[in-house]
Image (cartoon, rainbow, N blue to C red; front, side, top):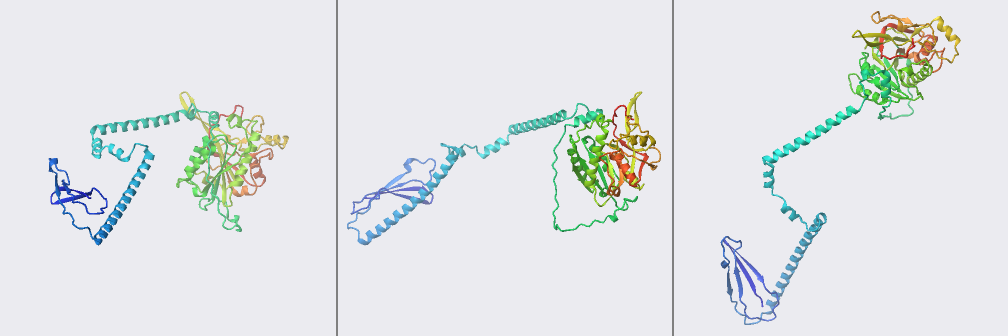
Length: 515
């Protein structure tokens, strides 16, 4: 027996019949006629539709009087098998979809935990219209603006306080212009910033290459600029971070073509921030194409010198012998490393010069002397009668002319003793160029010298190539620059000074008792 219930849903110009079998039991023999029930309902619910609108009609099916034929039974069996196969495939497809849904839900549950689902979370989110309305609300905009202003103000106050704290905590207790040379040395003695250099090693394309150097074309002439003669500026450094900035300011003011100038520095036995200050200034200058030099070099070499750099210690009489020998060794290391075959002039320049003419190289090479030095003075300002007075002090007593008393004293000393010039412990009665001349007079006036100082020296490169260097031992009872002058004079080179050409050294409070 089979009963089908059909629901008819009312919709304009469309009727849908839903037939639901109430039993799938296979009939073995004819059964009595069973009425079929049709239930007619609208497809879409309408307002004001009462349940009574549903109507049910019963139709009588005529009862079959004879059993079904064999062909009819086969057709029914085939249709039943097809229906069951379709039902199985539909069930399998629905099962796979359910498995996928369950798998996705399982992954989501693994992330958010049990009892949570994305649909539930999405249902709790406010609609987009409500979000837009909230953002456009004037109160919300005013609150957001106030919050942003407070955050920016807080951050600016924090950074400003950090900057003030940084400047307040760093540095000595008094400004540099009120510090003495000893106080500056004591303050900068503990500073030491690490410096990392980016070394570029050349690639050897052919190791069997033979380099040919022709020194016959290297000349030192008065027309150095016209002949494009290269100049090597050498500066030994030790605990000199305070002076480096001023040193480079003066170097950049030189009018000699910078593309013809090479710079070389030797840093040794330093305990302050000399290396960091030097690297910073070199980077600043070389990155400026208007003032950059042809090349720069930094040589590091420690000699085990432990003598303090304070004025009282380094200019004391007892320190002169060991100090001058150590300085001679440092100059020789720097010279041997930096001097190249194409250099025509070597310019030795100390780091503590505070003022010099910008045309000093052109002025000196024009004299065409083997070795030439200027007069070294310093400015000292003192208050007298309520006014600041400039006292022009004499600094370098190492440039001198020999005297009979000096020769007699040297003959009486052991050959390993170094005469320290300018100290009352060893009176020589030599004529000091520092006590001669006037910077207002003729700057080209020359005088021969037997000893020179090392603050500012112009040397023809061939003098050094001939083996005339700075003895780190007692040479005729002199060492370093004074020994250099003695050695050059013995080799036949001329040593001269310009008493009216003044280069200004930094003011130092010399130890009482010095000449």
